[in-house]
Length: 236
Image (spheres, rainbow, N blue to C red):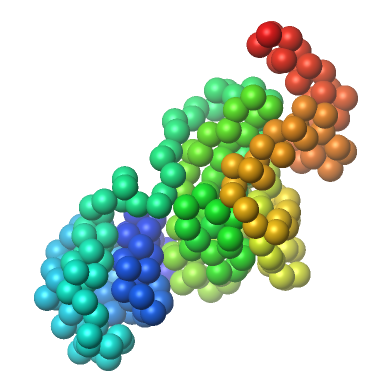
């Protein structure tokens, strides 16, 4: 079901489902597909009206009929892509290869804001950061909705972040771990908190990397330590 839902459409649908309360993302997808057909795209979503959404959901008995109209309106605005700049998503920073020497790419399983509150197999999105000893940039937000329609959702989720060296998660099962590692990504479990707090600890580790981190970067630990020392001296 390749390209059945574009990334931007997936993000809009996930946010709209959250606005509708108990409605799951999958239920909203099914309702929208019954009307708009696959693939679900941004253009198709902008054709939805409040009346359309109300009739669609009530007609399929997907949700209760007493959803407040203001919430339906907000859900439709999210489907249209309005207000995403002011949503809970952190702002993105530009990045080009070579911008941050000595950096690595890190994915964080998240459901809201920049919290590390996601399980690998059920998080709504991955926040993707470029991290160096001196800087952290959020360079991408990757919704997982399309991956969940794949034949093997864990393989598809791993493919979403296969350009990263590390993925931080609250939890991950054994089979999923194997698929993530096979994609070249190192999973790390965390108790929670914010992505930035965890990445600040990673920045400290980058200055004097333990062997496991040096292996991920493909460099000798001592070489990376010398790089960090030289960077600090140049920055002084």
